[in-house]
Image 1 (cartoon, rainbow, N blue to C red):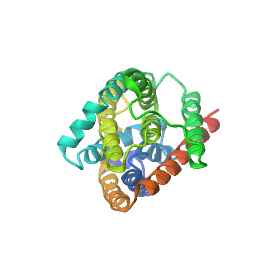
Image 2 (spheres, rainbow, N blue to C red):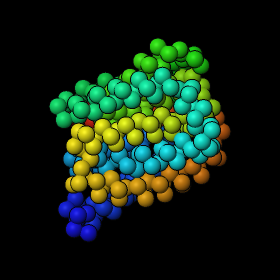
Image 3 (tube, rainbow, N blue to C red):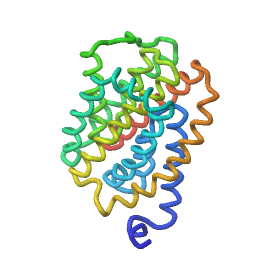
Length: 257
């Protein structure tokens, strides 16, 4: 008990549980945004490093569930289809995670938030940017590298991935599964990378472990909501969350200046 109270008082834990559960609900509905919700919410009451540590384990567990929801065979098919994205993103993430303590996040947040906001806004007003259903290995490598870079720096690699999947017009179940596979692989690498960087250690591990149950409960509730959506509704909700995520990243970047 003392270990947990060293991190924060009871009111902090009540707030942290609520943030993790909300993040799980959002993820269950659209398949992403858990790291963004958690790092934004937790980052308002603890240090950025502690907030980043807090999201690592719940992100890993919920993504594994999401990836395997239709079975191992379907998940393995997604791994094979997006192997270039996964390999490139993973390698870049391992490198960029080591820079988390030496590079200011301000410009990184703005560089990520501005284009995501523009993409979501243009698509919502009826001027979408579309990609080919098969952009080729080079295109996937570029997007994977961008996602991996920002994932290692901030724990947030969802938006570039969602932009790719949405622009390719991916069907609901496949998009949810692919996101689980991609983010689950990234979360596993993030775990190893930040054990190496020192972000996840004995002082921060209790917070990350405690965030798993409320995040899983939220994910279950989110899945129940998402199962009622048709393709059009799913796309609109996804874009709305993506727009909010982009605006939040811009806000964080501007206030950090």
